[in-house]
Length: 282
Ligand SMILES: *[C@@H]1O[C@H](CO)[C@@H](O)[C@H](O)[C@H]1NC(C)=O
Image (tube, helix red, strand yellow):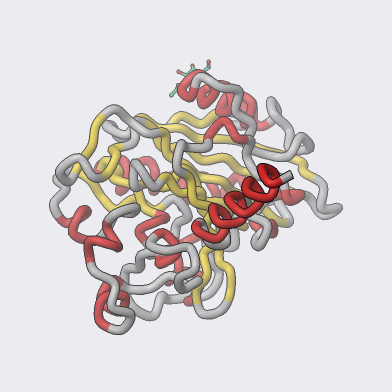
């Protein structure tokens, strides 16, 4: 009996010590078709589930790898517009410093000056601007791109480093940009709405003094809904992160590619999204 009580006290202390741990996207399921997130095969050892909050509204969702200091994926609804973004600030994520901390993305300078965090505290579990400034031949590659968001605020929100990976410059400005800006427009022509998940496969090398992983592949998957709000099409794209080439594939092939790369069965979307349809339409 006493043992049980001790165990309970110990358990509640551990719980308190870890703050409010939210092991899911429960607060922002709207960025996943049918509320279905990718399965656990993609989860890193030390994950953070981030509902990306900016200007009091959730803008997209990101699964983040605290050890490798890159996102695993960002998920969003495809709502492209050419609204301008108001400023070119870059943000980091206070929740990665301390889970009870601020809920909203913030600039490094505001965190250090106004909230008195040290740069070392910020850097511990995420990449910072200085990491990206020393990289050569690598861009700040967006997973959820600014051009796929509808409002100025949602576009601004994509400029958070938790949504960024070191991406081969020629790929980022070349075929990946072509996929984001041309292929997506073409493929979604008859879609009433489209859900997107874009991710990065961790590579074997690091940049910025071993701090930030350099992904081996960048990938993206889309599930397109028709007038009746049922999925009618789905597709994928995958690129090796050291050359300017993007492969267009069916959702089924992309999941198979990721299954091979992760060594675990990967499912990205709800079962209702067709796996082997769109491949033939390219
Ligand atoms: C993805 O799978 C297809 C079909 O098996 C294969 O041809 C292609 O090389 C794979 N791509 C990557 C990047 O693994």
